[in-house]
Amino acid sequence: PDLYVRIVERRNDGIVVRGAKLHITAASLIHELVVMPTKGMRQDETDYAVSFSIPVNAKGVKVINRSFAASELNAFDYPASAHHSMPEGFVVFDDVFVPWERVFLAGEVPLATVFAQSLGLWERTGGVVEAVKMSEIFVGLAQLVTEQQGKERDPVAQNTISELIAYAETLRMSLDYACRHFQTTPSGMVHPNILAINVAKYHYAANFHAAVRGLHDLGGGLVLTLPLEADLRSGTTGDLLRKYLHTKPDVDVETRMRVYNLIRDLTADAYGGWQQVVALQAGGGLNAQRIMMHRAYDMATARERALIAAGARPATTH
Ligand SMILES: Cc1cc2nc3c(=O)[nH]c(=O)nc-3n(C[C@H](O)[C@H](O)[C@H](O)COP(=O)(O)OP(=O)(O)OC[C@H]3O[C@@H](n4cnc5c(N)ncnc54)[C@H](O)[C@@H]3O)c2cc1C
Image (cartoon, rainbow, N blue to C red; front, side, top):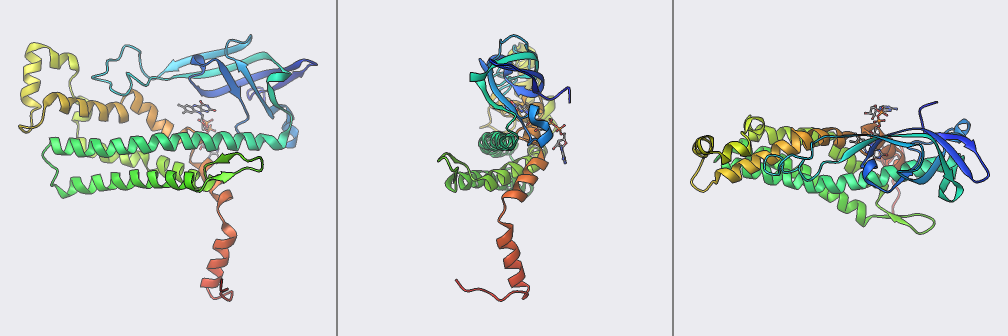
C-alpha cells in the first residue's frame, strides 16, 4: 500500500500524491507525465483511483533512468539500437502537489477501470502497429539472408519463411480488421475494436519468440559472431572478411553484413533484448489480453450456436 501511486493529502487547491510508477518509457525526455491507474480499484481503494498530468520537473518528481543501449553505438553495427534507444524511467512521486486543474480523477473508483482499459487498448494498438511493421521486416530479412546463402530453393528455408509470412499477415489482417470494425463510445469517440486488438496483441506476443527463432534458424551463428564494421574497414581484416564472407558473385559482402547486423540488433542484442520483453509485457502481459478477450467475446451467441449444433436447442431461421 505504500508503493502504488495514491493521494496522501487533499487540500483546497489540489492533492498531494505519493508512490512509484513503473515502467515509464521516455519519462525523462517528455514535458508532462500523464498518470493514471493501471487496474480497476476496489471501493476501499479510493485514494488509488487517481489520475493527473504534471510537468516532469515538478517538485518531488524523481526519475531514475536506464537505457538498453549506449548513445555512441554506430549505425552499421547497430542499425536499430543506434536510432532507437529509449530511456526507461523508474518514476517516483515523492509527495508531489497537483493543483485541481491538473487532476482528472480523485477517488471516482468506477472510472479507474475505464482509464486502465483505455490505456491498455491504445498501448496494445500502438504495439500491434509496430509489430506489423517489424514482422514484415522479419520476412524481408529471412528472404535476404536465405538468398545470400544461396538457399532460396531449399524447401526447409521456404517453410520457415512461410511461417514468418503467416505470422506477419495474421498480424496485419487483425489490425486492419480492428480498425475497420471500430467501436464508438457513448460520447462519440471512436476506438479500434476491443476484441480484435486484444486478439492481435495476444497473437503478436504469444508467437513473437517463435518468429525470432525462425529468423535465427535461417541466419545461423553468424547472427551473433559477425565481426564489427571497424574490422571490415581496416586493411588486413577487411580483406579477410571480404574473402571469407563472400558467397555468390551477386552478393555484396557489406550488404550481407548489414543484413546480419539488423537481424542481431533487432532480435538478439541491445534493441533486440529490449524487444524480447516489450513484445510480451508492453500494454500488459498475456494474461491481460486473455482477460479482455474473455470479456469482449460474444459468448452468448457462441453458446447458443453450440447448443443448436449439439441438438439441445431447435435451430432458428433468420
Ligand atoms: C520496456 C517496458 C516499457 C514500458 N513502458 C510503459 C509505459 O511507458 N507506460 C506504462 O504505463 N507502462 C509501461 N510498461 C509497463 C507494462 O505495461 C507492464 O510491464 C506490464 O503491464 C506488466 O506489469 P508488470 O511489469 O508490473 O508485471 P507484474 O504485474 O509484476 O506481472 C509479472 C507477470 O505476472 C503476470 N501476471 C500478473 N498478474 C497476473 C494474474 N492475475 N494472473 C496471471 N498472471 C499474472 C503478468 O502477465 C506478467 O507476465 C512498460 C513495460 C516494459 C517492459
